[in-house]
Image (cartoon, rainbow, N blue to C red; front, side, top):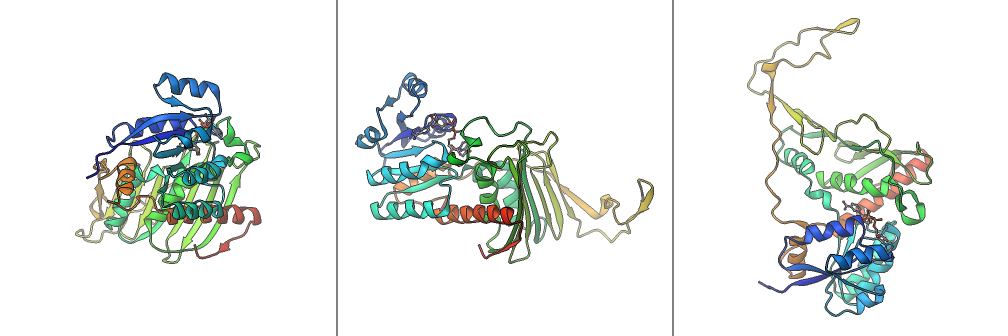
Length: 352
Ligand code: NAD
């Protein structure tokens, strides 16, 4: 096993640039040595943290001690920095959304292939516990055959008051949070997408979307609702997943919720009518306790490899990328289709 240390320089030392220092720290084969930002006080804070700082992006790329460039700038700057870094012989990790268009990603991948350097994207929410639980219960067939998935994140704080509100910087919630939720969805089934319908939300009056709702249908019959909101004072659950044998509700990132499945051993019991508002109903009565089983939601075991452990394994040729560029590209094509469906107020029938 290769024991060398891969030195990282961070381009864009803001919120996420700082967070990557924490992510890299526990992985012994990789270390942050330098930072570059166009804003002085960010560079000052990099210096205070003990990192090398640079005069310019070119100065970073000229530094032979740097093996890896981590891009954590606003979205519109990713492409140019990625291509320059690859051409300078560096491996590149890029924050999500990797680029604003799917074509831009292909341009980067072409350069990475030519330069024989690693290019990978930090679509980190594949490591989230709520997603890993959803994935496991789907993969294991705990709730039977998968019929319908609803995946949402909602907040009441609007879009942060920075570049995320500006179109030119690749702002808006579809590109910001949409990437994560759509990436997770596409991991859940192997089926191609058949059609997409969507609406974008502009409650806040910004030039970019402050949220969206998308309805996605897959060839295998699976339907999904993916939704992001920033003007929701009361929120809907993070996940609602329906299968032929049960339903799972994962309410939040703290993993509150419930999984209820049909008790295959119980004799059939007729539902009893309940008072519902001003009427009676059997149809909408909850299932009897004997006819169902409740499964506790448990925190999953730690993932086999963290994002950065996987990155080191890729560089050393010991593993496939956890996040494949083809998968990242498919998410961007889906995002473009959601924009198109919303703009034309049409269901787009397209195999994705
Ligand atoms: P931020 O505004 O906090 O930080 C961005 C930094 O980049 C700022 O310090 C800015 O001065 C600097 N910058 C701008 N243009 C630059 C350039 N050309 N060269 C060098 N530095 C430049 O933003 P953030 O929240 O850290 O977001 C950065 C990136 O990380 C975005 O792509 C965002 O989508 C992504 N992000 C990912 C996650 C995640 O969970 N994966 C979370 C938050 C942000």
